[in-house]
Length: 181
Image 1 (cartoon, one colour):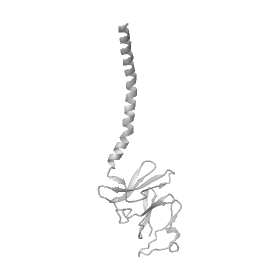
Image 2 (image 1 turned 90 degrees about the vertical axis):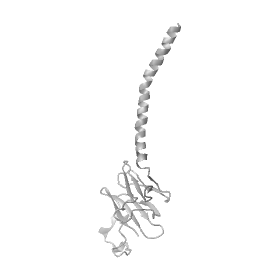
Image 3 (image 1 turned 90 degrees about the horizontal axis):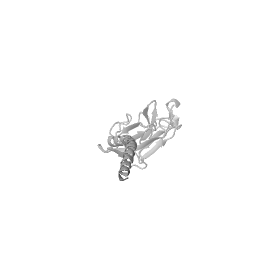
Image 4 (image 1 turned 180 degrees about the horizontal axis):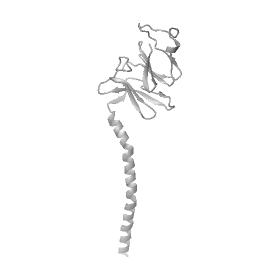
């Protein structure tokens, strides 16, 4: 009787182990697969952090017109100490502006000066409001074909204490700039 009980115990233990291994392997595989992207993402951009200097430092807007909100964050590159924008599209794609690279041919590579950071709503009409001589021009001085009606949301950045800033908007697969003084 003792031998039969011992045999049954060993049999059920082995059966339990054999049945548990595939479940254990599946859960380990799932854990590894789900953690891999997070590890890569964190290690690839660990030198870029949300700005502690700017508040707010994040806005949401539909920049590309896909009806999915995109997230724009004012960030700092810890390697060169310069500020810029991290644009996280709703589809997972990311783009970075400034942080040591020229911002859309504006002669600016650092957004540490930004004091106003907000969404420029779709449908709003803007124009480059500074002429070639550096004078601020009004709506009446701009031809209608030079005015830009935003097809999608944009990003408004401006210096809070002086003139200077603009609208960043996405059109035809790339970012563009509208000067706003």
